[in-house]
Length: 130
Image (cartoon, rainbow, N blue to C red; front, side, top):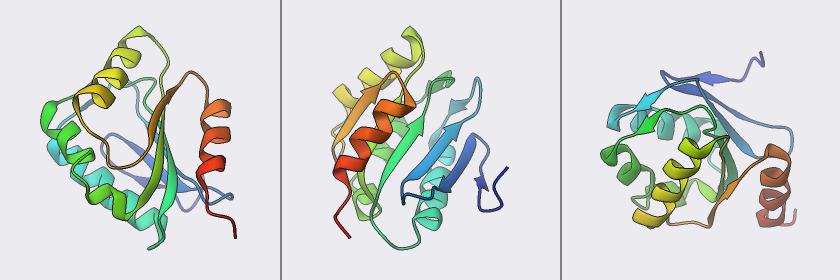
C-alpha cells in the first residue's frame, strides 16, 4: 500500500501521481454522518490545499445514509473538489449513486461510471491546464 494513503473507518483516500484524489471505499460499508465528516477531512488532507478532481470507488458500498449524503453535497466539498466521478459496480451501487446524484444537488460536476478507466478519463478532462 502507498505510504501516503489516509485510512478512514470506511475507506482509503490518497492523491495519485496525476493530481487526482482517489477514494476506495471498503467492502460492505454503511456510511453515516461521522464517516462523511471523516472522509471529507481526509480528502482535504490528501488534496493538500488545492482543488482537485476526485474519483470515488463506491462499487462495494452497502449504503450511505441521508445525513452522510447531505454532508457530501452541502457545498463545502466545492472548496476542495473540482469534479467527482463515482465508480459503481452493481445494481445496488448504481441505485445508491443515482439516488445520491438525483436527490442531492452536488456543488460540482458529478457522474457515475462503470469503470475506473472511464472515470479517470472524464476527470482528466476536468483538470486545469498547468
